[in-house]
Length: 285
Image 1 (cartoon, helix red, strand yellow):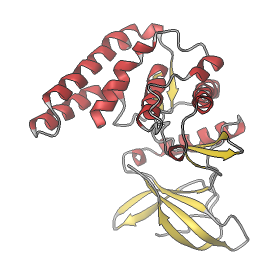
Image 2: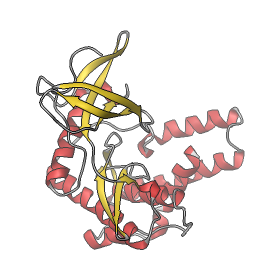
Image 3: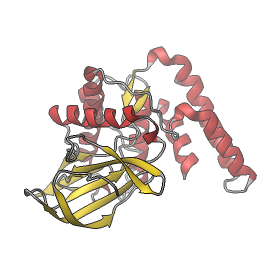
Image 4: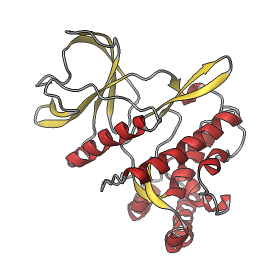
């Protein structure tokens, strides 16, 4: 890489972490000129998010606000020039945003069983995220390509996959039906549903958990690259889906009772959530 990317970082070991669009690395045995944590995380943002500087600036500001309001998020380790991030040449002629974060305590949610209290806590976290982002007045124009707002593109992809025998006719019809139902029941009745910033990716790798004496605690919320404006029911649905798909105890479809404690957002029946959950599940299974 070109210019120094973090304040007084001299050397470290590099280990690749889970990442889909982004490239994430654990910096281990870090040596700093003036002292600092022994571990850090380096994130190289994907080209789609990198198209607009405001996307990265938004994520930085959002994390600051969430931390201030009690939702633990990774803290930025500033560059030598004082900025939170900078463009670095990753390969010849390709420059992408690079950030370095401090490491939060805990392990990924996927390492734990989803007992009822933990599921309730996740629901409360989701509701708190919605409340805080509403009060923050933050806004961003970015919409991730996987979002249901791009359902026409999703249907085009489904058509291509069907033509190339990647998915079955039955699955293709199910996806189309789910997206059509989402259009009919949610979009056309938008005035009945809360709209605002959603995390859109609260899954088994984006929550950190600690467990002491059998009591689990959420210690970190990660990855804000999919945050965008949408119907809040979408955030609930995707969270329910992720918990259901990664539940090792096979407890059935979880209900995020915790979100009701924080906000009267589930005034619509649970079956309103299912069209979106099913569509997303079968689109990317």
